[in-house]
Image 1 (cartoon, rainbow, N blue to C red):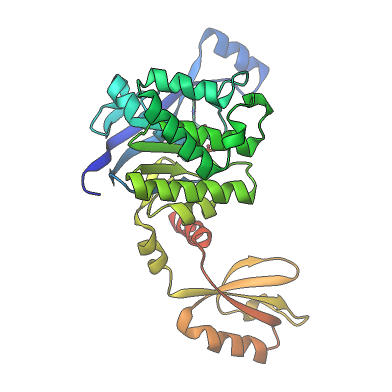
Image 2 (spheres, rainbow, N blue to C red):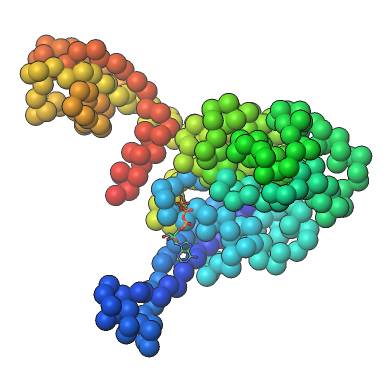
Length: 325
Ligand SMILES: Nc1ncnc2c1ncn2[C@@H]1O[C@H](COP(=O)(O)OP(=O)(O)OP(=O)(O)O)[C@@H](O)[C@H]1O
């Protein structure tokens, strides 16, 4: 820890799109006189990430996460503002910059389907000019940890999704990047593959001080990997801080879930209802009032089978979005 791996200053990205028009007449008119509209995908972001941090970059669909990653990795020009990654300006795409980062995207493979993973890795070794013996040792070690040693010589198209993702990870870190960008890396994977990849990332971060910048809709990914969270909503940051700080901020509240009785009446519930279906209700109450609230609900014959739960990271993030709206 210490120096900044990533610095982002007033970073914005607007996409200009041609409006199609709502009916045929409008579409025809647009052919001759195109109507433009602007999507403000990322709006004046400012944040810093220290070297060796594991950052969760969280937001709903369309919040601007991929757009931000593309600007940080130099594949997209900002509309205004700038960023620095490992001290480089990404848009200059210098070789030193490219060697200092890796990107793994869950929905886009960087492997060649007809090559074996080993062929692809050899290609990387040549491109990155890494001594053969050093690279072979790194690959053997990473393949062992990820449990894919036997898969290195199979044609990539014959691998399962989970095996292919593990190879993507292996290739991503075998070149020894300082910052690893991950966009939805565990999408579609089973629980065991997810667990292996999470453990792998955490141990690599510890051993090599690798900075991890992760976007994921899977809150288990975020909870088990990240220590620093940046939460975005409609292109703007709504939270930037340590995960523990966020958990502490909401630790004064508990959720009580119960099965509704026949005499259940919503107007009798003197707490915020968080979730409800035909059978159960979940309410949020201050931690020190839990016993009192349950006693009252029971006395008024509102429900049975009371369960008390802490707010999970996912609940807290949903609350943050609700506050924002
Ligand atoms: N090439 C593009 N042209 C026009 N608009 C775009 C383009 N790429 C993204 N957008 C728009 O910019 C906004 C942010 O998109 P972005 O892909 O960055 O979101 P995201 O947070 O990664 O979403 P998701 O979680 O669904 O992947 C969205 O409104 C999207 O429709």
